[in-house]
Amino acid sequence: MDIILVVFIALLAIVFIFSAVVTVGQGYEFTVERFGRYTQTLTPGFHIITPFIERIGHKINMMEQVLEIPTQEVITKDNAMVAADGVVFYQVLDAAQASYEVNNLTNAILNLTMTNLRTVMGSMDLDELLSKRDDINARLMNVVDGATQPWGIKITRIEIKDIAPPRDIVEAMGRQMKAERDKRAAILEAEGLREAEILRAEGQKKAIMLDAEGRREAAFRDAEAREREAEAEAKATQMVSKAISEGDPQAINYFVAQKYIEALGGFATSPNEKLVFMPMEASSVIGSIGGISELFKDLGGKAPASGKRRPSVPNAE
Image (cartoon, rainbow, N blue to C red; front, side, top):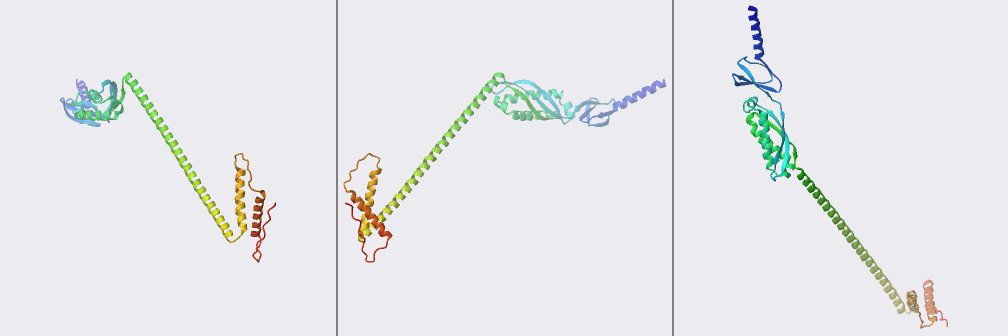
């Protein structure tokens, strides 16, 4: 009988010890209840509680967790039916609130996110829904995080994974995109043709300007040449007139012979067929040429001291 009592006391002591010792792992917190009422929260490490009076109420995971949002259908502002799903990242900050302020924490977060997902996406057009996914994530996180603060949790991120419009809307969007690209291609082609025409017109304009500039320069040089030729002619006429006034008959012969030969050269170089009748004797031309030769002799040799001039060559009869 004594041995049985000792064994019973030993077993009771062992049960008492195991009931009093509590070890909390890293990343977790345990709530302690005394007669069913919350008293404290145990952090990671070794703890001792009062057996049979205190017990562990809830074991709360304090690490960041991920919750999948199942696919659900949403009607947008412009009455388009789309299917959307996503994920929620959350972390428990207060183990007591997460344990006693809400029943079934994960289910509460899931339903709250789904209802707000429909609300946010239903207030937007389809185009906004497809192009402003970051705005949807931000609005959802603000709403859900504000609603879950009394539960002692923090919503860190909400991400929309997929938004699937109906097939007919996808096909219509594809046609619209193709039409838009064709429009941009036509605009770019028209702009290219316009630029080419502008460059071609500018090139023609510059060519005309350069041609006009060349003609003006040529006309200026022709006028300058004619002016110099006229000056030379006037100077030659002045010299001949001076020689005639000084009594030099060779100057008259030179002047007459020059004009005579120029006139004959003009007749000879005319492109028209002609038959020229000479109304003067050939001896007159020969006499003029003889006068020119005498003039060159006078210019090449020295004049006589007596001032007498040499007789001209007699005209051939």
